[in-house]
Image (cartoon, rainbow, N blue to C red):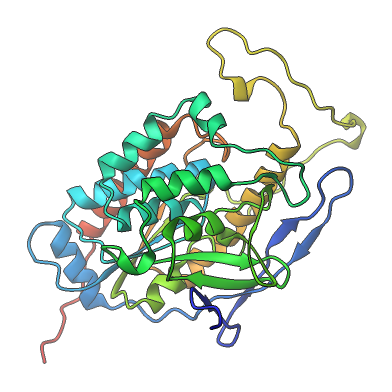
Length: 358
């Protein structure tokens, strides 16, 4: 019957970007590179942009399809909830969603009919005991966390729905880590799709399909602009929650160190002080280093991807949170909301050329 629930993205009409991937688990590490096909972006239509501006000013009805590309970012991805809230308040109707990693988890829930309030409740009502209860550690042959508890949690959250039964068209990205191929999951069990799309390498045990070993879609397509464009969107809103802080561009400047000051690092942990969160008490462990290595690679790719993909509206969100900090969702949600409001306000005040009538 073939792979019905996966659609392979070919590498034909593409611009190649590089992605770093951490392979080792204990002592020896190296980075290898996988190419990804970035679809050439068509020129944005001034007419659609003007219509969008009128919609958010309450001066026109939305008679075009808005596609939302929700990016990867682990806990930073809680910002997507704030983005959705701001879009709703502005009167923007989201017609389709493509998501990578946390973008697939949040976007999948929204496409399944969960309200912004529902998503916020799940994010904000999770303390460290709830988070720990979702983790099922295993002997790390392919990942530290098996991921079955997360899959069951998502299945319950989504009501056991399949993608083809959702209220909105939806697609999630995942990557075959063995060959570096990007796949789009646009059919089948939604929880499985979100779980595959968010399988951060080394941290989570990958899902499989035959010979495919499927990991986080953000490894190659952290902001799936090309995917939502292929779904038929007229106007694309891309959300990059891996944006670097304002004024920080790793390509603009160098930071210098003295080699005499360097020493071998040591892993330490201590009992948290009063009013100190447990996850800040000590230096990063192996899982955290692996996680942050992947996230940094994704962030560098995302910066290039949003420039090449040319979405109609780009919302860059720098939460200031560590990617593994799932206990401060409120900060990420608020930051996503604020950055979306800023982006929408900027669209209201653009000068558009007169559109000639037929």
